Length: 357
Image (tube, rainbow, N blue to C red; front, top):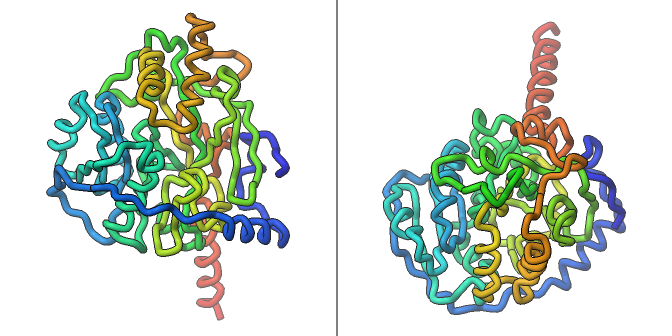
């Protein structure tokens, strides 16, 4: 896999994939083992009363003790036109359940198995997708992820899905970009304030992008710079779920892989670094629910122990977050509506010529 620097205005479009690359993707698809069946014991503990139709898009998200995120999370996605939130609660005890039960657009579910036994939420998510219906679009998210795209507060997420459908794309690729405060030790997440108003810095450079046989690959950023982590940052939050779809290779590599090479039209603003970082890391390690014995959290804990006054901001990399337009200008994502405008202009010109004949 050949990597190039990211962000870049030249690296986020739909690249031509050669015959050999397509063959490698097909071979990897054959090797991907199906998910094992599991007795999930899914049961609904709250039912939404708001309208939800076939053309609407629902958010699917697992939560565990994320009460501080919920107000801003729900507000953000309601502004994007989301009609239903399908939430899987993993034994929360911080008021999360009570808060969600009071929302008229939330369906709340629980399972008899924990996050790790549900293959880190994959089995839950697949069960929800199939229960609520195939052949429709969903937003597949974590509660600390806030999707943005061009004109996202003027153009609803249903418009994005329609645009992707016109282009014969079944998913929208979007990298997770960590946002962080200038001083995380005194930055407190507030329920009613967008988190990017508190954690308003991000690494504007220092990433690499490439194409693996299973889709886009983006690595780097804050977690690589400060914690030595090599996390896969690419996700596909907006997805069309049908009989071919599967998460058997994980959230970052949904199947079929051939759908994972579309243009990067969005960015997931990702929020992990607040004043309670050490507490969250210690809890994650103690909970024993994360991949490879919480290896990522173990590394973060090690750095925090060695550098109690850790500074995340770096003048060489950091920039203040200004909005989706800034991310387009930097090359993190491309303009979403440009193709539609160009097509409409061509159609108008063509009709004018026909009228003149």
